[in-house]
Amino acid sequence: MLKRKIWLFILAFVLLALGITFWLMRRHDEVKYKEVLVLGHAGSGFLSPLNPFNPLPSNSMASLVKAMEENGADGVEVDVQMSQDGVLILYHDVSLESMTKAQGIIDNLQAAEVVGLKYTGGFFYDLFHEEEIITLEAMLQRFATYPELPYLHIDLRNHVASRHLYYAQTLLDMLRKYNYPLEKLVFISPNVQFLLAFREVEPAAQLMIDTAGDYEQALVEAKNNALQGICANGRDVSAAQVQRAKEQGLQVALFGGKSRSRIARMINMQPDAIQVDNVAAARQMLE
Image 1 (cartoon, rainbow, N blue to C red):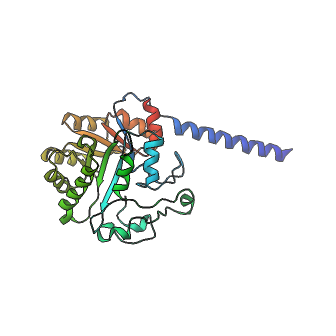
Image 2 (tube, one colour; image 1 turned 90 degrees about the vertical axis):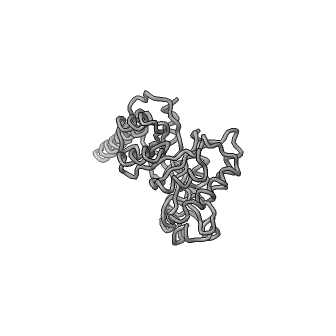
Image 3 (spheres, one colour; image 1 turned 120 degrees about the vertical axis):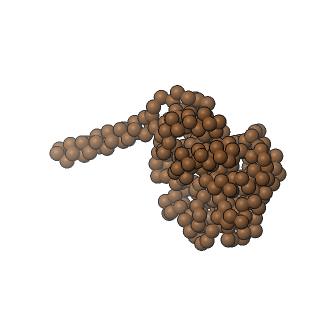
């Protein structure tokens, strides 16, 4: 009898803990602002064991498709690198070692050495996918089948300054090939000179500086270089800072946000766009 009571107590405690955890995961401030674009951060975000569970590698085709076709994102943010032979590739990290069994950085490798590499996020996550590194063009081909092209925030990743202009020309040529409207494109980097290379190729390009942790300096750089926007981690900025940027005539994009509480806080700061790791939650909160 005593053992039975102990097991019932343990069961009740576990159920209570699960209930509290579930309540905390769904708890958030009232969303008072609705005019915001919801973009999938690198598709459906990054590997996560819960809240929500996400086994899909960032920038993979499955991650992008889930954000757009299952969860109803307005668009996606993607990380674009360029191989040594000028092929545009979707990949987030600096080195291939972090998410594949290969080594090196994409800038120094031929596309044939990178495209098709299997993602390896760890044994547990790898049970749920067979994703591989894809090109930007593969994503654009998928998007071309949609009734309307989605918004696209492009995080520019190039580690060779002498190739900034070549990268800009190559990327813009690819986007023009698929008739991507400039009003749906934003180019993002913490490197002002890299952004200005895009202006040289396309004067009407929307350029957004990544704050890289220094919001105030980014505001100065945006003003001095007549950039169109500012991109910041939603965890690190305040509503007052967002408002100040908008008063300066800048678009504001905030990234991050997996929990509902974080996403609600980001939305209520009234940015123009949020790049979130939990598109489904953001979309539900804005309905």
